[in-house]
Length: 418
Image 1: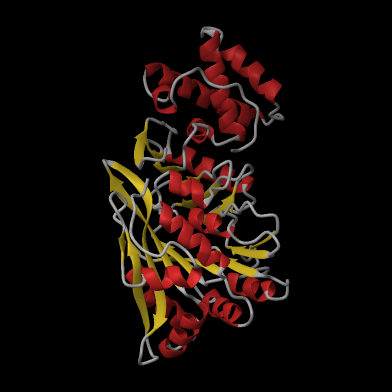
Image 2: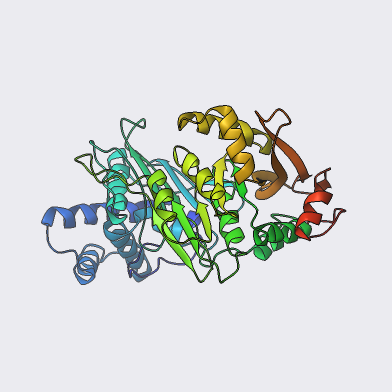
């Protein structure tokens, strides 16, 4: 979370506190006090803010005063009215589409929160303050920002005119402790036999692509897979911005950097993959493959660095081959060259999806497949190993037995996921 020391608002859930006439009055008073403090231009210490709130809210109860103080302090130094959502246990995402259009995910899919940020200008101000806290520039000249807030919250923000009005803010909250494969299995993300199989695939240094849509759990699964790497191996993890948490004793993190206002200083993902090769890695992991870094990644995996793992946006496991070919064309690799390079560097596709389970949207590993070169040696093929609907028994396919035998895992037969 964003670090600051305000008193906690009165009890109750965040969405309950944010609604009702009392909450609206508290929000209006907090907004007026904040604006007055900003106009004064004085140093905004906690004691000064508290004194101003106490002075202007004498008619309120002590609990209401504490609520207003928390709102003012959060508005000035934290995530404003979003702070209570971020602080609620289990929150994974907070999404702001407008001043009265705020959504959050507490692990069961998106739901609307009763949050009133004020006006479009207040959303814009909040977005710019959060970007500054993340060390990013966000203004009319650079109307989009992607970074990480103090405490680990992932921020993405865009300003008008890239969005209809004001700003749009997306916040993703990391887990306090990285997920393990056993944790994910216990939560029902995959069957137990898949946990064993994937752990063995990592140990055997198979090249793995984790695919899925946005928010499906790719980064979570990548972090859990990397924890299966032996502790005497060195991992170099490359990301556009820090997002993946890994509990491993020897991880070196590289993060891309955008150009500054003068258009200089950019360090791309492609360049970072090249740099990683000079850092004596045992494993290279790429947080998200989306451009020219694919070429460098395949070269790295094919030149003495087996067992690499990357994530890729794809709607289904079957789409991964076409996605790789498309990205290959973007970085100058003809389809035939890409197919041969990818088939040599990558062995496994693990696809994650968001699945409706009893009315609740849950993250599930739905497909395991092998990535192989077609007999004509011109195309990539996706050969299913196992599939799961996220609810019932999984279905082993023809590739299950050979893969399990190759890595020494469970030989055959499905079991229940939980």
